[in-house]
Length: 538
Image 1 (cartoon, rainbow, N blue to C red):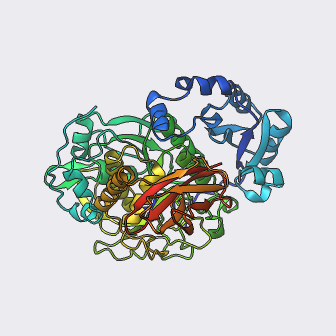
Image 2: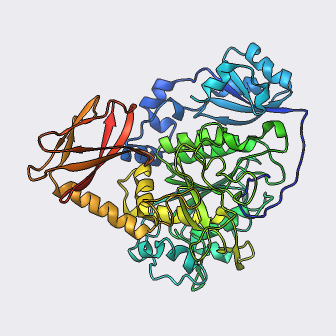
Image 3: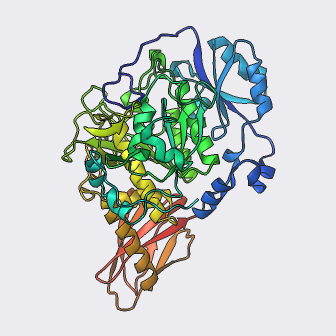
């Protein structure tokens, strides 16, 4: 069953195009990499640079654009149509006959390798291995109307009451179309504040996302975050700023839409976007040779999932619908929600019980999926004719949560995307007993905020430290002499539990030699100590 727009029950037209193939052409190098990194304003916006600096995200070769002369040569190649490009992968999505695509490898010395969407055509082991590789005062006393339940379920209204309504946060909505958003009364408040920062249709290659569309899906999704009708409806982040991107062409199913999505994520990164909401999912295609199998939903096979992981590495909080396959033979969370770096959102009913259509996690996925849940059955949205009505799907549980996360991050601007994700997991209703239906459960964003503030206070008040930092093999804990023993739980950047140990003032050594290079969190707990320390393993 095709699952692009994660609106439960959406039907799409089957369209078979078997004569031509889709493929990713990976390139060997880029131009002026070192110069561009030293002068980042030539490749990134200042907002993007500031966000990366704030969260210690390294600007690297992946931020440098694809060599345009290479793209021009590929466009001029016999039988080749260039559909999309990715600076993160240094790759170009092309369409053409299998022979013409294969000829690119022998014709152009800058082509490193080629991967066909039809993976049975990928005979090169190298190809397979490579790819593993403006302040305004906020109205806080909102009347939510029929949308009250979906925000109160996650305690988002408590953040609004504290003036955290999304001001200063930027959200990119990657979807299928936003008809009438430029005219609707439901988005008048958004437009009056000039909070639509930009638009782009990656399918049509123009900026018209309001009329050049085959779907109203994006309008409904956006309304759950940014919609506002006085005394009738309020979205979860009404004062955030938004970019609206189309990457999905609803009538057909083709993997080029994965490439469009990666392009949109790259643009979002360059613009300094904080949060991406994507209510899209990818499993099977019109051309069955391109289709994934459930076993491919391992977080590192689908092109879009690998791209989403890079977006996470770049400091973006990527939020994605888990999928609507709970009642189908597919059943499990779809790409890109299967990626470890994606905060995947399942669906519950208005009473908090599991919505049976919501896709489930699986032991083969790299982290607990879904991460958390929000209301996706009977969600309240605004349609393109300004009618307020209910709709079903993880398409809506995801943006409901995205808006709440934007408000939480506004309250905690010094936290990283990984820290925000972990705080929300820890606040959720079944954090200590997660399952494959609800993940960690229904979050309490007020609890997440309080937890972060208490951690920050303890960090200042308690004389506990970890050294050296970065650490190679052994880390040592400086503890108050009054502490007899302190329990330490170590998590990775994605909040995945790794191991536990115990230290005392006299035996204060922790062996981290088994950890790979990267960033980790050590959570220290005793009768008098509660503190989380971030450390780097070299």
